[in-house]
Image (cartoon, rainbow, N blue to C red):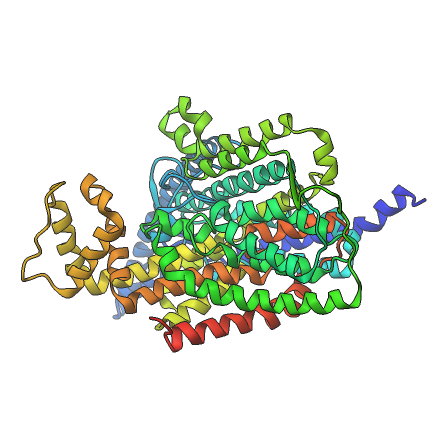
Length: 638
């Protein structure tokens, strides 16, 4: 038996090195950060200014130059002294105000985060109008500019991703015991800078708190679905042939558009593992992540978080199905065909038993009441955040707020489900605990990356839909794909606003003058761009037109969808965000959850790099290239 004291001492140097590394990263990055232009002048700067002033004003002639210079220097010195005293007083006042602001902000944050006050109702992680448009809501009732951070503040994020990828390869035992320190430690580096040391504290605090609000909604959704789905046993009394497995993946891909990729993944992963018991391989889980947890959910805004964000920004609900189904079909056909061939060959090597064979029906479901709780969770997705209600003082509405509804569903499910069902599913809280801890670090450290992208996305050399497709995809595989989608959507909307500003204002005037129940007569001076935009609004947003609730974002989106060339950009951003989220374990929320559940079931999953280089690059990327060629180069069916 291992001596606990010896085991502990073995890891003390490693822990010390981790903590030292965190301190060094913070010190180096903070040292590299320049002072704000509006900051108080330092002593050295004041001295340099005084010398420069003396050199400029000192007489060039002899005589009394020395006396005059001495008098002048004394006057400047007194001025500098007064300036420094005033500056010191200003700094003291600023620090006092900052301290009060921190206290107020932390109080607002509540249990670690809240939904942005500027959000629309709903969202898989909440929507931030402010962040995508260059503003961030701090939850304190105001709008703030998105912080313009230097690139090196993305280092904690890179280090965390590198740790997730590399450390388990070096020592899985060490990682399992200390991943919390990596996630929390690096997360605190970013949090400390944004909350206390950034030059514009109002904007930095708002930006960081906003991402923590996103995290609260994110983990509320994942956690509630994990608990509720754990109370459902789906028993399949059929041999796990290649045809059965492929069919199950197809069903999951379709179901993902109804209950979301997270819901479908949590609901089907356990029965999928169960029917393949004793012969399940890592590729079974990887293809499940590809098809069910990502690519399958691209036919509706409910399917994947980026598409839901687009819906809240004005992208019509049914446009997603109409525009994206060809890419969805091509991707799933190729993906499932590859899986079928691989599974067929594996099936031929070892005959698979019917592990759950009985005389009953092919499919049996236990814990059926939990489907009602899943419906409650999905309904909660469309509800405002509890923090939004708190900020508005609507405390009576808290029971029907998003996160509270999800929590109630999870608690009710746990209380109403028989323990034997959880035992049948081998249910534990280990996977959701790991996801919750790692992703709090990811959400914190990725704030600078998102802020940097927000400021510099328009500087990227993106000219074609194909370039938007790949850039959105690559960043979505490393960052949260929902805010990445929003940044590029807003970038394109800004370009449309610049190019078609007069036409947008014209269409705005037409919509504002519209009276419900009366047809709109377009006059001869209407340009084709305005006419197509109006037709698109009527097709998808007639109720909004009649209610007078059409937003400027709705109009810009209509302009994009009404122009086939511009529409291709929106298609590229949508497909890139959803499909490429499957390329890494952190590209989409359900990915890591499925991995954790599989490992909890004893399946040896590939490492971070193993997943990328053995599966994503050789399988997914060629499929995505085919989609690019067919739809963005050859423009098949467009």
